[in-house]
Structures are given as C-alpha cells and as structure tokens.
Amino acid sequence: MSVKLNTRQVGDVSVVDVAGRITLGEGSSALRDTLRDMVSKSQKKILLNLGEVSYIDSSGIGELVSGFTTVTNSGGQLKLLNLNKRVKDLLQITKLYTVFDVHEDEAAAIRSFAS
Amino acid sequence: MRDKEHRVTETLERSLDSTLESVDSAEEIAVGAAQRAGFDEDNLMRIGMAVRESMVNAVVHGNRYSDKKKVRLSVVHGPEQLQVTIADEGEGFDFEQLPDPLAPENLMATSGRGIFLIRSFMDEFRMRRLDPGGTEVTLVKYLVSK
Image (tube, rainbow over the protein chains, first blue to last red):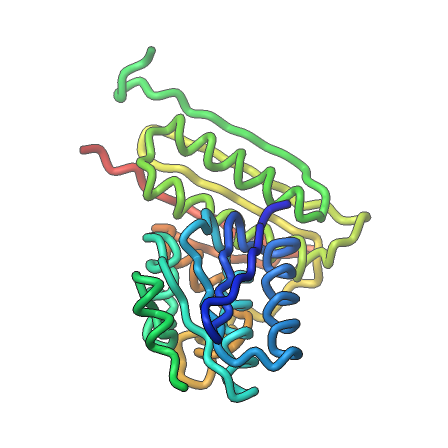
C-alpha cells in the first residue's frame, strides 16, 4: 500500500498518523475516505501528522484542501503537524501554508484546538 | 568514467499505457536520467514532481485512462540540460484558459495546481497542440555546474 493511515485519540482530538505517499490513486483516496469517515462520525478536532509522508503531489494537496474545507464546513477543525521540507515547500509555493494551522510539536498542536 | 566536458548525451523513449503505473514509470525514468546527468537531490525531486504532474495530465485528462491511447515519453540529457517531452492522444485543451491557482477565488480549489507546479519546478515549460490530436508538453531543467 502506498500510504498508511493510523488514527488514535488524544483526549478529544483525533490524530491521524500518515506515512508514505499521498499521490493520485490509492494514497489520496485513502486520505479522503479517512477524513470523510471521521466527519460522518462527527469528529470535530482532527490533527494530521504528516511527519512520515515521503511524497505528495498536487492531488494530495487537493485532498488536504478538500479535507480542510469539509471539516471546517461541518464545524470542526483540521490542523497539520510535522511538515517535512517537501510538503512545507509545496504548501508555501501554492500559498496554502497560511491557510492551515501548522505545528511542529504534537502537545502544542493538541492544546491549540478550541474547545 | 567520463568527466563533465565529455558527459554522455542519453536519449530514452517510451510508449506508455494510460495508467497510473505509467506515471510512476515515467517519473522513475526521468529521475534516473537526471541523476546520471548530475542533478542534486533538490532538483531530482523537482524534476520528478514535474514529470509526475505532466504524466497525470496526459493519462487522466488527455487520454482519460483509455487502453487504446498511449503516452509518448522522451527523456534527453546533454551536458547542460535535461529535456522531457510527454505527448498524449487526447482532444487537447485551451492552454490560454487555465485558471490561476493562486487567485483568491481558486486558492481552496481541490484541483488545478499541476501545471503551476510544473512551471515552478522547471526552467522551461512549453505546451503545443498536436495534429491531428493530442497535447505535447516539453519540460527543460538546466544543469548549472558548480
């Protein structure tokens, strides 16, 4: 499998550890399905840990944006954690870096979610 | 081992199926050639991404995954540059009407960033309509000697 997704709870925050490639096909579909499933279960606080993401293409970026919009429109919050240089550069080039709330420390990210 | 002044020019040509596996293959072929040409890690990443995005456009938007249509890949590297050409057999599209993914109204779009990324990562990017049909894109990256 090109991407591995592991979901865990830290208090009322759902942390999704993403590893591998978020590219058109299996990778981006898996991320999309996971986020939609979480929204359907009314999970409002979602932290995507992208520390083990080795590769992301424009489709993967599109799924991050789509997920952000879906979660936000349902009254929730989606934040990003542990961006590596590649992902950070892509989000900066596409002017999306400031759209997302990005963190480098998981504990701080968890605390940042509004009640 | 040849020194820089006598770097071998390599030409690779492939006719690929319109599948996501071909996207991976093309990226591998191009990055392999770029590595042999002497590009550093950052530029290998940029070249790989640009080729991937171009192949996705050819496979998904051009040929629409048709098993009757091929994607033609050409990778040429010389002493000073790497050139990748990708041609599909689709219906073509209007290059002039591409939306700007950085425009405020498009920033949160879920697609439409591919060509912008290709242009960001490569030194030259050209598109042309093929006769009788299809689109050909040419990507060029200069190898700047240290």
